[in-house]
Image 1: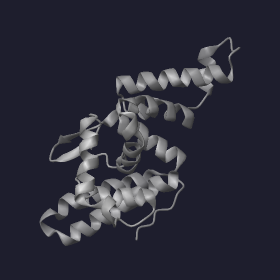
Image 2: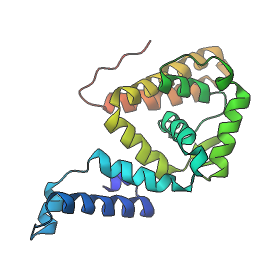
Image 3: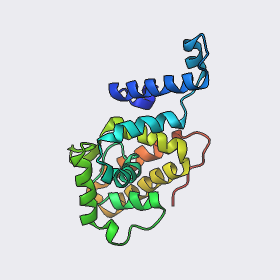
Image 4: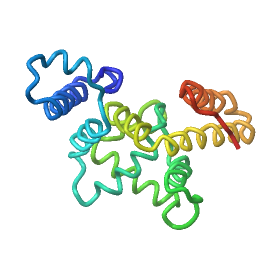
Length: 196
């Protein structure tokens, strides 16, 4: 459970409460709660409940829009810039990053909403998502929509490899980013890795 919550106290507490609730819901007459907990596994509903609680800070009118943005960017553990955002949003939507919804102006608007809700911040020359939220959303995406999760990581590998070739002065930086995503995909045991 600590791995799912990334070691963040609030996330771990929410996960633990949701998990105990899940276990009690399945076996309310159990005399040995500890045994029931030890034999149960965390399901998607627990992760979804925790994600929903963590995202309550988003005003209702922005929640769906920002949830989509967070899902698209949650694979970027080491952060992002506005010019990267369209590629991941388009990959999540299974489309091309073209049109008015993918302009830098549109991306800045989405970024500003993330910053306004404190779910994103500027750190080390990049925007990063709140790690407690990012971790839960990535685990949930991987669990519910594994192929989308894989496509987002594959998009990252391809994008950063391409930029490493295009921008030789930043080659090492982009190669390191691509390597991180390659490693994540390689650790996803039992699934083949393919890069375009």
